[in-house]
Image 1 (cartoon, rainbow, N blue to C red):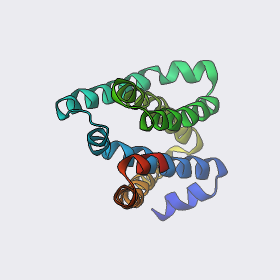
Image 2 (spheres, rainbow, N blue to C red):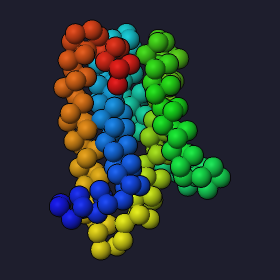
Image 3 (cartoon, rainbow, N blue to C red):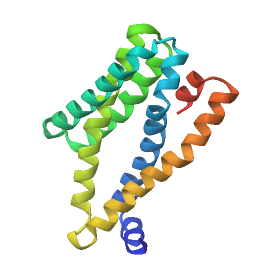
Length: 171
């Protein structure tokens, strides 16, 4: 792990990728893990939770599928900027709406997650030589999970203090 840390901090590009991964995973996964609570708060019947989750994973898979074509046309960095801006806009829109529009915004935001991940993995693979690649990729995954572990208690605290809607909006 110390080798991966040294390789990562020696490259500005890797520091940006790993740090952005930590922040995006912290906010995105925390909101995703709290989805059922958010749906209940929005008065979505429990019987639809499975369908909503299926759409979330379906849109994410579609994003993975489309990622290469989009990044070829727009460029990797531009695509990352676009999806990083659109994701919170869609999530914020979902928190301010209800019913079917809320479900549509919430589920379709997952396509951006699907687009983002292969591009970040590709950029990490380009930046790291093969002898250090596995450890740096493991450290990147570790940092993402660390972000989730740090954000979940904050989401829970904000949800208890205010509401789940405010917690998702702050995330």
